[in-house]
Image (cartoon, rainbow, N blue to C red):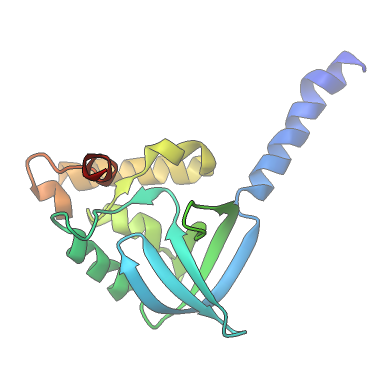
Length: 167
């Protein structure tokens, strides 16, 4: 192959494919349940239920401080409302669809972080579009700096640490 093709064209094609497949599926429906601060149940127009794990965030477990408040905040944002889920092709280990939840044009995932009710989940940062990575990281920094939500605590325990300790 000619060098400009390999050096310039192939990477450009790969970048285009990667950016268009970040959110490959779209779900639309009404939120009929909120399990916790990063999981909800959506009912689509075919009356099929979808468990959705909000991508890019990790909220406190129910047994942790701010766990129930995080769930309540997500419920206030989404429960009973029509949402669009920009779903990745990925499913988590519990078979939940992973995606970004938009309600009235608002990114609910980002709203959870900005209100101080979730962490930006950096373990999966490479699965996020670059713009979301930046917004989510900035929202967490702002919530920390302004002591919003769980950042009122001196040293909040991240949910991944809490889950690991319980095993």
